[in-house]
Image 1: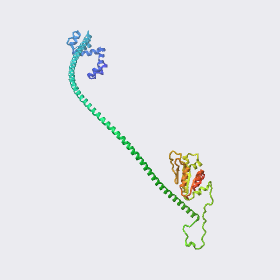
Image 2: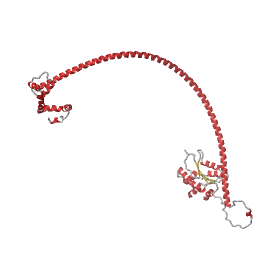
Image 3: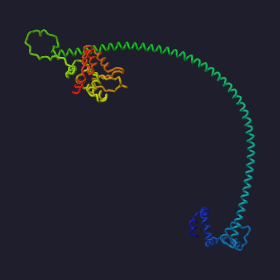
Image 4: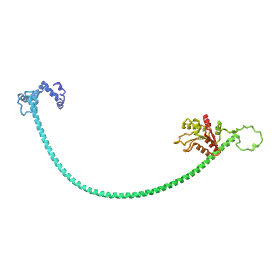
Length: 405
């Protein structure tokens, strides 16, 4: 076996014919020795046909394919004619078979066409019947649709009439409701005015009573503290005289008592603020921005407030005096968040109100006889404080006192 065909020898017959056929044909065409070896078994199995090919007398009943294959292998004189004859015979047979297949297909198609025509006729008859029934149904539906349209038009006219009536009634009811609402608003306004007047009267009564109670309590506390201070200064006995006190005897010497300051202090005396802060139940009112702009006006307003309130907190802890710091709030766009120190009250004036006016209200709210000190370098504020029986003090004294703290 030639080397190119050995790898196809192990294939099964169908696979060998499919994959090895071209290689086998090439070897048979080019290798005459291999072709003779292949033809040797066919000589033995077909001796009569081999002899007929070699003598040129091929039987008419022989298979043309078999004759062509044997002629190709043996290569007798005129073998190409045998191959060509086999090819022509095969083409004739294929044409005949194709014609028979075509005839059978035409017959089948004719039968299918006849069946299709019959089915189409039956389908057309059925569709004609259904179309007739549908036309009858359509006529009934058109009649019913006309009746429904007539009823719908009547219902629409009735609904339109009802809508018109309802709209007239709604307009009338809206007018009546508007009148009732207007009257109700008037009554509510009058009721609100009456309630506001009653509340104002109650608030005025309550505030007046509360203000008088606070004034009276502060005045009593101030008088009590002043009496205790005078008792301590004069070394007065805490009890009334006893009979034994009237018996003559030699008594031991006693320590001399401390006298009150005998001279009036000027507004710029550094000891003025110290003396005022020692008064019982003293109320120290501070003009905030006047003090901060005098001492540290180069800082932003927030830093000025923070620095002043920090110093006032320490002063309140040392002296236990009531301290109120007033800032001008007329130009503020929103409330200012401030953490006030313990013992320091922080107030802002209302829009349209100055800090000077708020200080005047605070002074006038105090009872007569209570010690009130107003810290401000503004001459108008100082004059107003004097007229209200309060003691003014310049901002420089407070700044000096805070700097020592």
